[in-house]
Length: 371
Image 1 (cartoon, helix red, strand yellow):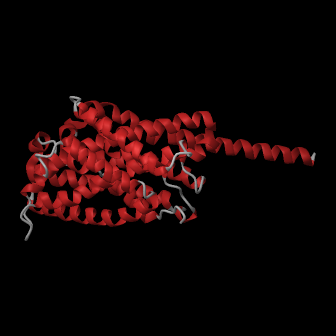
Image 2 (image 1 turned 45 degrees about the vertical axis):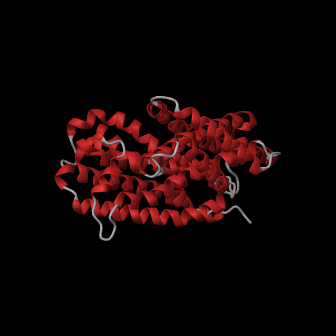
Image 3 (image 1 turned 30 degrees about the vertical axis):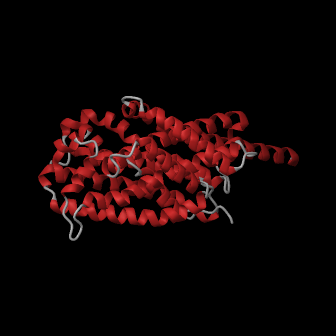
């Protein structure tokens, strides 16, 4: 079976990867930095990362049926390519550990308060490893179903929050006095767009020709989705409570009343966990794909087990580190800049320059021949 992923499937991969944990803590992050002007910063950041998504998809489509591991060697040579691949390997491992700890925290707080986090981590990592071993193509098919359910449920709840909320809470839409915090806010918003680099592990074919445009619109749509979550949360519980609660979106959902459904927070978390699981699965799958390229002589399922063990050990260590979230959030934006901006732009520019040089050389040889 060919490793083909359709444009629709890539849309849901980007959507679920970027919104893995963002929908829960983004309102808190935005409220304490940009306040009621959050919508503007989110849209601007989405436009920036939308343009960066075009860069990544242009690289993927230029080198069809290849992933970053393959075509980076053609662009910068094997030595520099290894450094790039090792960076992305470490980058995704760091993200994976962070998200697994977040997942364990959500499950412990809302579902299984008496279950030790190490047990939750073991079970979840085992599940993610099993699914990741099935390959990107099968995961993409699964994401189509999960993505539709998660999107529909979240939009329904946010719409109910907008209807039941107080419009005064989000007024004024733009506060000039908050502009001093905008640069800091941009830095904080890089983290919700962290997962864009997973595109490097998806081989493009001729069927993905128009995906650069789709990728830009996808990231812009995600920005609007973030705006909906932030604004609906503030409308329900107000700006001060949104700042006070780390999981402000969940707290806001608890207040919403829907027909038949008594606990809207449990209803959302049931589908929200599907998004959380999806983010962990795709990160695990990307690491497995990179490891399979680096260690081609080792069977894939063995690599999946080794990666799972590494994840578990690092996650247990992470449980015992104080202020791990603060530490991650302080350096994560720089990792995002490198992974989604500096490296992709550099590779694209070098690939274009190399093409120009080759064309010039060929033209020069043909001219000499004519002379």
